[in-house]
Image 1: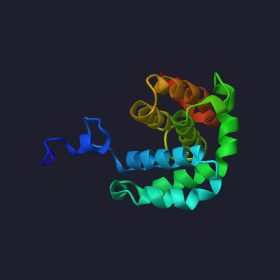
Image 2: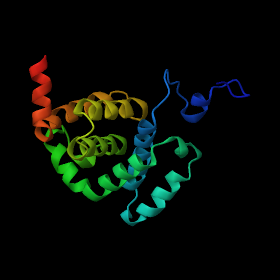
Image 3: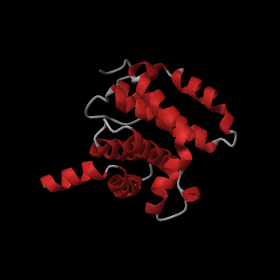
Length: 167
């Protein structure tokens, strides 16, 4: 749909065109990325409530799956250290050298792979890759894909092995 200015609503939202509409879960992941990014760059991690309130105040938040956002947001902020320990062996640099966007996406992807077993591992990886394509650096999606692809067999061995056996 075109706005009065002749610019589509998607272009107004983020300056990019989406060939297909984003699901409520995808939007929840995008808002979780924004919140986790803010949490990572702030030196005072006690601002969790303020960060969440700020994200939820966005008018576009109504189109997101609020429960999924909360699950990711709370899960990542509560389990961040363990998630980092899980993906750290697959990094090509120390965690402190990651861009905050890649760091946040790896936390989200690792959380979904580790704790959200109802989400197929390929979906968890793909959703993280899509976040990296939309919000990360030029080749950040390749990095995210590589790290999560190596993490998946350690946290979802049976599922990954079933997928490999079908090929």
